[in-house]
Amino acid sequence: MGFDFTFHGAQLTALGHRAVWWASQRTLVVSDLHLGKSERHARRGGAALPPYEGRDTLERLRALTDRLDPSTVICLGDSFDDDRAAGALITEERELLAALPKGRRWVWIEGNHDPSPPAFGGEALSKLTLGPLTFRHIATDQSGEVSGHYHPKVVVRHQSRPAFLVDRDRLILPAFGTYTGGLRATDPVLQDLMRPDAIAILCGPRALPCPMPRIKPHARR
Image (cartoon, rainbow, N blue to C red; front, top):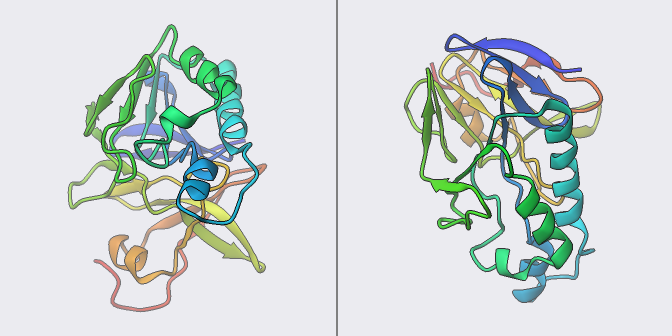
């Protein structure tokens, strides 16, 4: 139930589950898990959040790896809500994290929330280049980037849906984490970052492409 598209010569599938599948490389890409968000929120004096988001996020990720059997999994940064969050995970979450990387390459890309993500059986890198694509947390001016960070969303019929944003230079993934918020595609940051012909791919039971919403004519060219 994904949407197939070509990006810099790579045949990719945007999955409605908020992940990218690169079939020829057997590579699964997710972004912004933000594990430990409820614990960090409470630690910093915020309102109490139900403490189940980590398990839900990891179980959804395990379901994808069980179904697709990737040889490589790339987590595009902010996998943990801060550097202390990993140490505060409950036993069940830690066991899930320890099991997921077994038998495959698992890459933790550094994010602004977790500049030193723990390996948990994988490897931590600032960025990763595979073939024509470069995987990093925050988009730069390099063409062929796959990134996260912004948690893009699109409002359709008064309902906000996580979305991929794609143009000829970059692909930005939605957040995979259960408790993550989002930035509307009409926000000036994303309007300026993406080219006028960018598309959005809406997540849900089916991945649905549409033109990226535009609110001003002087977006990036």
